Image (cartoon, rainbow, N blue to C red; front, top):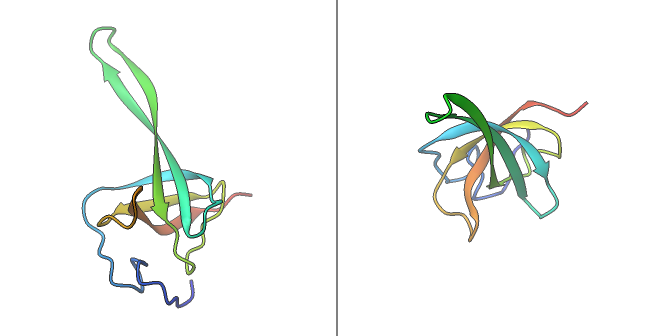
Length: 98
């Protein structure tokens, strides 16, 4: 990680991380400083007494000091609203794509 001049960076900027944080996989990193993170949620269905998988896709801010790419497993944390669709920021990369 290197220093960055991004004000929205949770590490070097003024944005605080509060609320929920979770691990997910980056499925798209095409927009500038934005990634789409997908997480798999297992939910119990009482009627059938079984578990089902659901997925959730979230847009997160990708600061230049972290620079997550497609296929990376990342931890993202909830922040204030950063844009129309972004309420999360990438905190760190857990594992990179091989």
